[in-house]
Length: 483
Image (tube, rainbow, N blue to C red; front, side):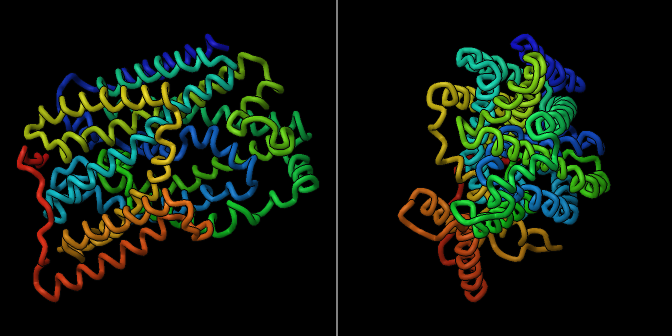
């Protein structure tokens, strides 16, 4: 089993190295593939963002705990892809025309505000660092669940992370695209195998599985009361849909900006909603865990506990390779999304060559920090992880206002004020358990505050013809390159 997992990690690293085209220090080629990627590469980059360690391990555990409440990704993902059919081509066209390489570039250029570009860069870096750590921690957990050996988990985290850093430094986004082929192929094969074998082995098939679930736990077949009630379900769908449609997370931008043209993106978004149906497979596996394990043990290890009972060890190793790929490849995508953001919008390096090397250095620093935290204090960023999507979702109103033709619908000061207010509310609600708003997502409450403040500031700005208080400026360390 261990040999199979080691081989899988090495294959992922090798594929990442193969992805490089040419030998240049071009930030455009490294960060967005030279804006020349076709339908297959961009399709896999975008589809792969929906298949991570959460899909492979977390969604099984959620389904085992709450039943049909875990169906919310199956609703918001297709809805978001349909919305992106309209939004993504606009973002790509404007970014290509102006030479934007990052989310921060877009906001800075469209609103004409250096501070807004810096703010977006800082938010993206801070809120995505916990998500990067989650991928590294998930890799170690998968190996531990499969082998039962904590030492093997630690060494796999170190080895996998080193390989990710190496191929990201070497190949950038193209390396992520190449590894995505392998990741999606092995994940789909593994999940398809498990969704047939496990229900058959433990319940006599899919129909027997759900008959058993209905007899033992009928509440699992609908969204029931409790922490994951209908309020939680609907608000989770809304926040997730808004965040994905308006591309509020910086690691989703490279797959859009790298497309050869808008037609490539539109064709992808026609097919991607069908691909997201594959999310039903880990949910079914969660029902197997619910009926067989009955809440015993760690829910996150349920998939490997079941596989270990039904399959030979070498095949469990292959399943673990699918999970490892679901950690390593998204981690690489996160780095390609975050690091140019730091170089161009936070540190603000002047030259394109300097931006390239600053991005390379940031890859090493951020990954090293995430690895140390994952090894030493795996739960140290757990609370901050709650802010990853609800916090970044606060960029949605500013994105919407920038989508119209010509001028934006509001000024930079209004956008900044709304974002700051929304993030402040989300942070307050996340870290203040005594505030009881039911099970509604803090992201929705933050968006409400965001809109109120945005409209209020914009109204004042228009009435007075200018904002009384100037938006803070970023120190003049460098200029953002135009391409």
